[in-house]
Amino acid sequence: FNELLGANLTMEGEIPASTTEELMQDVVGQYLAQLNTDGISYNASIQGRLVNNTDALEPMDWDQTESSCSSRTYWVQKLLTCMECPSTERVDFSQDITLTGESNVDQAVPFEATLLNGENFTVKVIPKSVPSWVTGDKESSVTLRPSETHSFKFQANAVRLDAGTAQATVSFAIQDGGSFPGCSGNDVDFQVSMRVAPTPELNKPENIVIAGFVLMGIVCITAISFSLWLFLHSDSR
Image (tube, rainbow, N blue to C red; front, side, top):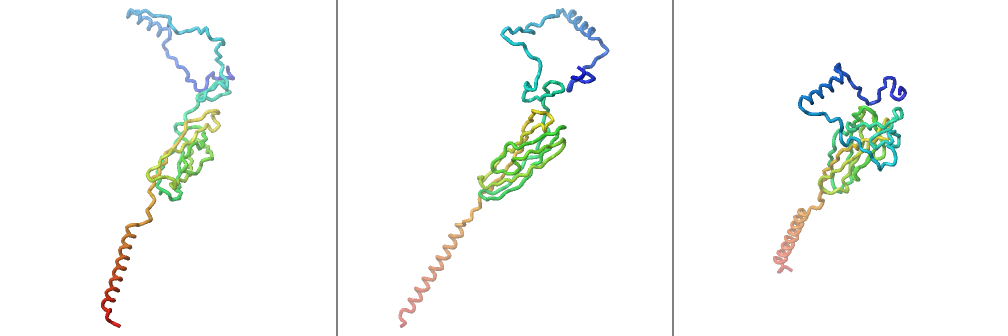
């Protein structure tokens, strides 16, 4: 047991028991005496506590192996047991992203998303889901030590988006970074929104109509002027 549990016979994650000056026998005696005072008898048997499964053909195996570890546990060879995977709740992006763009205009809008590892162990982050109108760090993985940050660089393009507001989620998968083999944390993500303005109307029908009336007026005035000149000089040879 010294090789398995160490010199102090303590297991990793175990909370040592504490004792008081009062003997356990005295505590049990006081409890039983209270029951007798209240006229209640103590039932030493708990019905249904033990069940004999006569259909079981194989005895229960209490030994744990690396293959028996569930998805939320990892194998510790030194202790020969499966330990619970640590939480990655404090691995998160600093804020969501809001951008502006123009529909049918091929223009890339750069932005950055900063990720902080607030846990006390190293994690590896891998891109998992990125919307089609966002490009950037999609293939590379990043390893973050405790309290370390990393800024992912992206570009958004509204050329294929309709006018309005486009919203999407950029998510990353968190892995253990090698400290806890087999563990994978919760996904970490941030929201990216783009306010898409409609394509500006380059044709100005109002101005064209006004110009048409002006030109028509010039033609009409010219025609009337020539007609009047011809009438006044009709007798001249």
